[in-house]
Image (cartoon, rainbow, N blue to C red; front, side, top):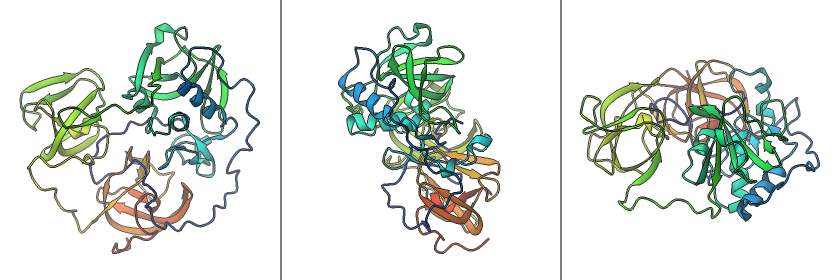
Length: 389
């Protein structure tokens, strides 16, 4: 179905990512030999897909044109989240039978299509992430509630569905129509807008396409997730509360360090970030890998080495899942929204996986017992220096 899991700062020994600049070395990238159709025959652009009302910026109109150019392309779970915005092979979402062949379908999921459309319109990768990430994007120039309906919307506005967490996004065209990548087994389509159910509202993207500048205090901007999230006077949940975030927001991170281990929302992490106001926030509630990229150490403890004779490797890709067995149909253990570090104990040949243009039957066992296909681990198809399980 749709890409629904939020990117979260998780245990380093778990799994997930933002795609590499294809420094991903050979992953036994054999020819793709699917028994099902890899891409749907692209239909001629639907006559109803286009700018159907006035008021949109030139950027928004260009985004509409880009989205409409993909009419007839497959919906593919996880598709569109490669290093560069564009159609990619997806993968099984772990629950929907219609998604079983998404690894053979080159296309987009709902957020992948929106990412591609605005990339084509601006030349900048403004919307990398899930539908929920896009709803909370700092590129939002205006926001509209569900109660406002479509009256204030113009072509190119993004419409969202979800309750608390956004699970789907589509692009408004005007005249009560929208373009969307709906679900596995379907193709990108034009359909009437849906403002019932869990429709949450809409966002208008900054027409200049100019990224929000970094904080003046020299920190780095990150997005939080969750509700009722607290910051503390020291990196400990037992210290005094400095602030409470009612919902997702932006924070300016100065540095990070290893401190008190926290378990919350099913995640465990001992890394805390120091914010611009001097307060501390566990990295569990900051979107990204367990250790935030590009953020210096505050001068605290040195990160511990890999445990249990494991070896640290970097992952790539977005929406990457680990499983309780070396099989994409096995239970999902963890989800990596962005590239992260994983500690590999051993590897073995198991289920053959085709994803993002690569095919490999090697799987790595991580220190938490989960399995990750070697396709999403940077390095050769069979990892050097790692024992066979």
